[in-house]
Amino acid sequence: MKNEELKAHLLQQIIDQQTGQNSQEQKVQDTLEDTSSDNSQHSEFVDYEDILRQSEFVPIRPLGHGAFGMVYLVYDRQYGIVAVKIIKKEKFDIRELEAAEIIRNETWGCPFIMNHKYQEQYKSYQILITEYSNMNTLNLFAKQPQISLPSYILRALMKQILEGMRVFHEIGLVHRDIKCDNILLHCPSGTGRVYAKISDFGFAKKEDIMHEQTYHAGTIPYMSPEQFLEKTLITQKVDIYALGITFYIIIVHKFPVNKKDIKEQGEKLAQLKYIERPSEIKDNHLWDLLSKMLEFDPNQRITAAQALLHPYFTSPEALADISSEQI
Image (cartoon, rainbow, N blue to C red; front, side, top):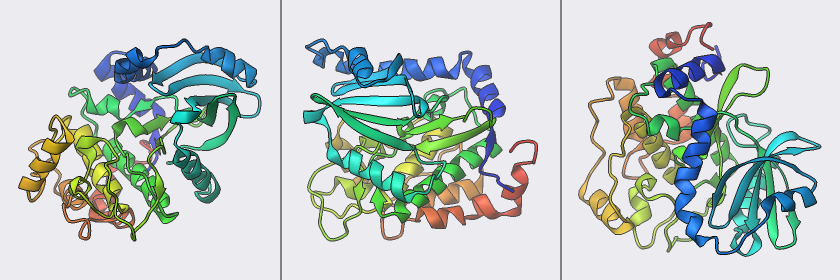
């Protein structure tokens, strides 16, 4: 039984009933809220739609913007409806392109990783073309306490994301910025299925277990304890911890630790030995899995492949949780 699959109408029904608004509208609203602080940094006008037209795209509407560029929904003659990210060349990190190329060539079409189509340059801009996810991000669930996901939907989402992470790690990459914003939901036209997709490879790189990292990368409340050390080896285990935090907050709707800056966050984590079980998580198998993902010692932290074999996904109770009508 493919219990990692979800029917779109079931998830959409939960979203509509509990938020009272269309998920696509919420996605755009979330994007604008998250990037509004960057508005002051746009000191010069850039006609992004003209850039798109000159590059032979048909712009449909903006999806979001930041300090370094814009994301648009467009029509592409080869791929149809896609998302296009336009970034100033001087602000573009080549690692994002390198990671996207590795993913495109080596993941063999994994449905749980965002599909990079191609890239091109236009004058002083780098243009990245990816598939468009037409539903939302996991932030929809994290930010709205009134949304309580049924166990079968939560289990299916977690399994999809962990499978995407397993493939991502299998090809030797570490993402370094796993968070709710970077897990997108997509329903391919005519399928009725929902797929969770790992996206945004701006911090992704090949895992390097020989050289210590001397700078911070990631989003503070998702960062693992070892990332706050002055010199540390950054392994794929940082993604597992961040994924544990991601799952934690779509259930509990708040971070276990969330201080105002990187210094305070690191100091608080250094005082703790582990993340305490919140009262909202009743399922013992679920908490056992999350606690293994949130293990402070990266050497003891579970891998994505190991997580997929956990009883939370493999026990008779888990297999019975999703009926044929729900997948």
